[in-house]
Length: 261
Ligand SMILES: Nc1ncnc2c1ncn2[C@@H]1O[C@H](COP(=O)(O)OP(=O)(O)O)[C@@H](O)[C@H]1O
Ligand SMILES: [Mg+2]
Image (cartoon, rainbow, N blue to C red; front, side, top):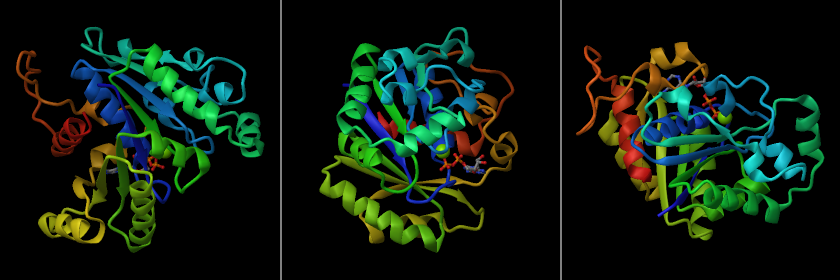
């Protein structure tokens, strides 16, 4: 079954794009046909992970009626690995200031936005379409959430995230999103994870996955997906990369990849 998974947060810079890029790679490594659409029109960044600087052919172009959704797609499967079992298609957002200004002025055409996402899913025969969003509840973000089978809500263990996340969970429930997972990101090694998970459940009635702070990820910034630099252990039937112990953050990201399938 193909799926739309929206990755969202109430506040900016909590790790949405990082999570989206890493999940996309893990799922393609598992043999899935994966789409990743950057809909953060004010803060495009998905392309950075895949060495696409100032990409030509962006989801902005589609929204502005300049091309079809398929014409915005960059096949980056080979970058991930010559023998990648799956596929990874990226539809980036533009970093050009004129495009950003145009998007700010544009009255969001929700029908076109929906058609863009659903046509990508269908025409690329995707198993899963990951939508990286802009923070807050804009019209197009609400539409992504409404179209999703799964919503990943990213938050930091910080007071300013708790209330905003509660509002978003409420909205997603009203929009009847079947599955919501909370992703508590960038946590301290001192966090009592059992207690934090219990608190997430008490506050939001959602399950949560905890992603610890990783200096190695911070050092990479958004220059490449973390799981390419710190790859997962081989699964059954794959060759084992010798001598590379699995990073604990990679293991958590794999758990999340399994959850969204
Ligand atoms: N678990 C983590 N450990 C360390 N740094 C992280 C972690 N998650 C995200 N970051 C860093 O936080 C910053 C913001 O992440 P980003 O994915 O761009 O956020 P968003 O898309 O929500 O704005 C980036 O510099 C990223 O490398
Ligand atoms: Mg982002």
